[in-house]
Picture: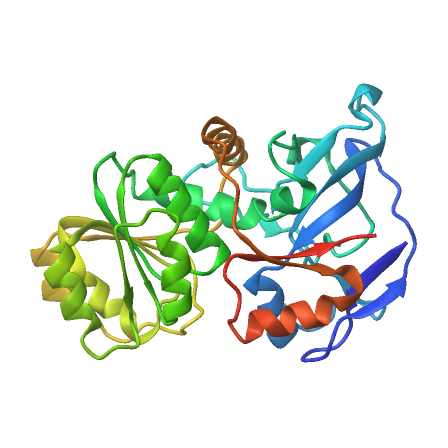
Length: 332
């Protein structure tokens, strides 16, 4: 089979022929139709050492069709259109992942190839209203956004919610989830073009964080937020405490803007704020996320579908931050 391999740090992925995997006990073999990129794949290429001279197949998100099964798996699932849960080995405690937790795609072989073998329990039937490309855009971003909103922040209908970095896949799904839950959604972005696009989703207002007075503008128009969802961290994060209502909840799940500088302890305790960190989620949350998407007929925003052989062009676009929504690979 053909796969895109990570073989050298800070180098392009190499498309090569590799051996087609064979499902073992409890596994299914999936013929992948589409896979989606995540910033995690970029971090791996920049930061990780290669554990194998043969390279690693990256990719956490994917959708396809079950082609064959291993022992103890009923054959009636063959031919089923499915989406993959990339959250592996979460463990028994729903509050936090176990020491055995890992993401699909590193160090285990991921979705940037024509086939993948994975545990049957991590494979769920694809929502019928979604194409393979749209379904592939869901798993990592959808699970992260769902847990941030509903498990951590425990949003309620009618609440005011600020979602930063509108344009990324997880942020856009968080916007769609919150709107479907009848929350009032505000957003930030560093791109006027992205703010115009996100306005079409139904958000109340958008603000450009590159403007000097962006914090004052948001505070004046919105008057503070019950919930803030952030995926960047960095120098802007302390301002989020100022924008939170007393008793507000702030959830962070990314680091695209780097480490967070010092924050005011007085603001934190006097406003009685809660800051939650989150990453991915449980199997139950993955199922609940797909049920929510099915119920509300949500379609994730896809920026562009690249042919598989242009995987490095796709990563270049992501690295430059030019995307609005998920970047997806169509697998031959």
